[in-house]
Image (tube, rainbow, N blue to C red; front, side, top):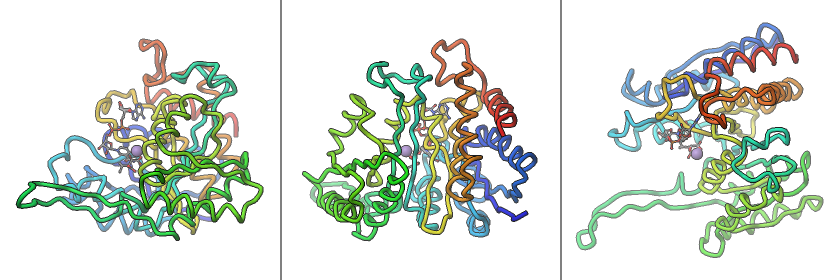
Length: 363
Ligand code: NAD
Ligand code: IPM
Ligand code: MN
């Protein structure tokens, strides 16, 4: 059977805890589905700083280069607050990794199944038929990668700046991805910008509009970001694909996580144009709950489902993982973050076991 090299980067905080549960799914894929995963684990983020003094060691990058995809936990945390910013886990490892592999397309599916409306903080009459929104976020441009600096002006004192810069070709690339994916969905894209103020946003809007001419069957509209975050709460089902620049997508995806249950359930795929992908939970290292065995492992498990879909074209297996998560939730199993009664919940390990057992039965 064809080999698939997977680099696993558990990272910091709850990263290794939820990755443990991810491994349960990977093992089933290996033993029951005969997928020939060759798995190598590497250090990234704070743990790499502790061991080697840098957040993205050469060996880790080399391991990723020699793999077909990356599965990541999360990086960062208060322990590394006092390190120079460009050497911190986020700016010294995660962003460079995204840039190195040109992972410009970040895909975050926010799904709330109709039977699980109680997971959402929104009123049931707002959600009614559940929620199914795909956030497509530009990931290697914008204000995250523009010029920035911190200086002292002799007269005015200390100042800092970050620059939002977008090249037309960057917007074209991510817009094309959105339109292509939209063909398989509701053929409706809402693009987010702040073009009433920002020049880079104007280019964004015009370029997305231009790309849309090649896709007459897909309905494109635009919202300013401030209105968009309000509309998402008021009437989430007017959205199918939300197409965002880097920073707006970061913010909006956390909002989508909240209305569909928890940031602990939102997976993400970061893709380039060569089917290479980095798969990770949309949330972070959650230092506030680290080491308590209460983190929700679902985002990590669903990130594996996205890996199957986007890097391996195993659509059916991918769907079965989503299905298994849904069944576990329908049966009433809830981790702490999504339990309504905070006394009655299953641990990280238990949720991983439950989903794995269901997955084994479903395949
Ligand atoms: P966070 O996403 O880590 O946590 C925000 C809140 O969500 C916390 O209350 C946390 O307990 C909760 N939460 C997150 N994941 C959860 C899970 N799986 N189960 C249950 N609850 C969960 O965001 P933050 O606190 O702003 O950031 C903490 C650190 O993580 C920072 O260093 C940040 O830069 C980093 N971070 C990393 C990534 C990544 O590696 N991709 C993503 C976001 C944040
Ligand atoms: C995310 C995270 C990262 C981002 C941080 C940790 C750099 O918040 O993946 O959403 O802002 O992209
Ligand atoms: Mn984020």
